[in-house]
Image (cartoon, rainbow, N blue to C red):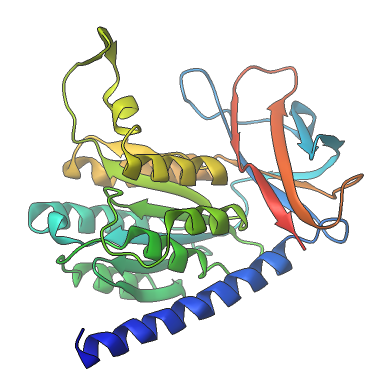
Length: 310
């Protein structure tokens, strides 16, 4: 290893140590069970996958470590948004796919509300923070136009770094991760990234390209391409990341569909509910399992699996 490469590696280790410390502080600040309140971001959909709107607190049943909780507030579409975009710029994105990606991310920036902010982080062989959270749309567009693709892919490191950008404010936090999920050069193991993601209130929507087309058969039965892809180790990581944070793994049909896919994710997120409760009858520290169900209504609820209180 050359001295220059060794120095770059040392600097990255120091950066990650700072990220770990910052993330631990963030967890302690945002979740204070028994002292403050807990917010749960939840998506409610019909059997056909369409978001359900118009619900009230009475339509939800929420349990913390198995103990029923009283929802004291519920909001939808009213809180400002912090959008974290993590973009895989490895060599596989060169050429036309990169241009489609730029178009899609630019559309996301254009769709932000007046009080929303966005951060831009790109990754290939290394992770680069292009912009911290900002409301400067022109600057974000310029950074997107200047993006170039080359190198390997550090997916785990990028997610880890992206989560550290979460600030201790009341804004909702959405992280859109564009990647094929195949990590080839990260320092941070996948299990550490999953653990950190579970400890924040960031909702993660991984977006990847569905490379398998046409009907597929497994054990003599037809299966969906998305179900087959989820069996791959890289996609299992993305699926777990989304599931544990209350998000959803989204498959775009092609690079040309990225613009619509990104905008659909943003529109879906804006129709999620934020449920607020004061934890009662549960320990004031440690891991808390959250279970959210509908009361007197049919539909599916997607919410984070729990939170860590200090």
